[in-house]
Length: 114
Length: 112
Image 1 (cartoon, one colour):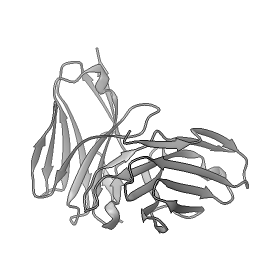
Image 2 (cartoon, chains in turn green, blue):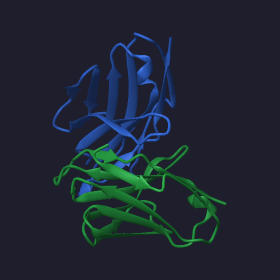
Image 3 (cartoon, rainbow over the protein chains, first blue to last red):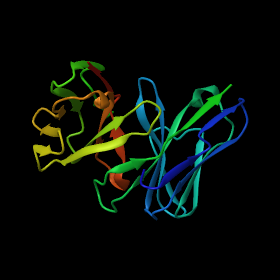
């Protein structure tokens, strides 16, 4: 698991409410990522981070924001959750600082927006 | 846009047979490829990777083949076991920040 935990593991919320998902790593890796996984789409990158306070958008960033104030924590926030954001969310880290490093994934958070 | 896709969404094999899972990619600039295995309810698990300067790489019971001419990647699993049942994803790295683009996955079912 490369020391990756995600919290909460499951969450049910209502449309319009804010939601924050947390990813925590214990090994001080620089690169961290948030993906969502939906049937028929595989894994799609939402946001990623190069380091503390250094983040960038991925393929499906609309409706999501992230923050990284410490190396070990990467937070994903849905400011106003919508039903289209019902998904399984995975955090990942890259163990390589150079191009082409493999990513290791956390256990996932299943989010349901009613 | 650029995409990574899979030829077969579901593959059924008999226990003990070899499995071959295929993947097509379209970004000729991609220089690093990974195969992941995902079991139900879990996150993707790294299996094996290959760089574009190679055409074959072997691991324990797994082999990845890369054909850059036709932009095709395959994962071969030898002597497939029930524990190999999972969804398999290929992914390519073609951008900065070690960003990966994933295929939609192939479900491998191992029949006893």
